[in-house]
Length: 329
Ligand code: AVI
Image (cartoon, rainbow, N blue to C red):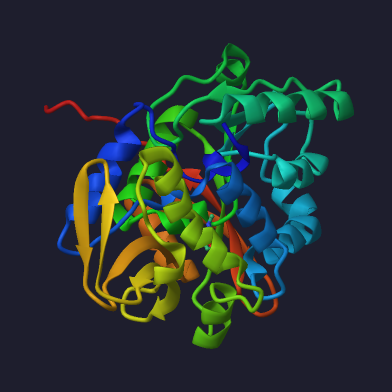
C-alpha cells in the first residue's frame, strides 16, 4: 500500500471499496469517503498539497514543532513510550523525538505496514539506541501495544496533521476514546489541529492556483474508473471546495457540469446538472471546541501552543483518572 493511506483508516475487505462507492453514489445526496483519496497517486498529490503556498497547515505545524519541541518534550516523562497514531512518514515525530527524554520505545501505528516498516528502518539507523516498534493497525479500533510500551511507566500519544479534522464529531470522539483505551491510565496525548480562521485563507488553501487540490479530488474518480471499471469523464466534473461557516468545515465536492449518466459495476448513476458528490469534510476547531471534544471523553487540557496568526494548534491532554467505584454502605 502507499504513503498516505495512513491519514484515514483504509478499507479491510476486498470489496468494501466497491460497496461503499455504490452506496455513496446511490444515496439521495451523493457522497464518497475521504479515506479513498489515498491510493499511490492520491498520496503523492497530498504530499504536493502540503508544499503549496496556500496550504498553510503542514508548514505551520512543522514550525510549531521546531519552535516548541523542547517545551512539548518536557511533558513526556523519562522512560515513556511515544505512540504515534497514523504515523506515515514519521516526519513530525522526528522533531518531537529530538527533544524527548530517553524513551522506552517509539511506536508508530499505521494501517500501511510497508510504509511504517520502511520508516522504522530509517529511524533505527539515525537513532540506534531508540527501540522503534511499529504496529500495523487501524487507529480507530482497539489494538495492543508492544510489551516494551506496556511495561513503560507512561505512554504518550501523538496525533499530528489535523487528521482528526477529517473525522465527523462522533468519529473524533471515538478515536479519542480508543486512544485512551490503547494508551491506558496516566496517558498524555499531543494532537495537531487546524483552527478556525478568516474564510479567505481557508478557501484559498483548498482552491490552490496550481489546481493540485482539484487534481487530488478528481483522482478519486480516476481510481473508481480504474479499480471498479466505471466511466466517469473527468472533464464533466468540477472541483468545488468552500468553507461552511455554520458547520466550521471545508467541504469538498465534485460537481457534475451537465446532466449525465455514469456506468459503474453494471449500474447506471444519473447526475443532474450541478449535482455534487460530497468527497471530504475538513473540520476546523477553536482551542475551546477542541478542549470540549477531548474533555467530553476524559482528556483534560494541559497546554496548547499556537502560531502568531493562530492558524494551527498543538494541544496536550492528560487522561483523567476514572473515579474509583465506591461501595454502597
Ligand atoms: C489530511 N487532511 C488533514 C487534509 C485536510 O486539510 O483536511 C486533506 C486535504 N484535503 C484537501 N487538501 C488537503
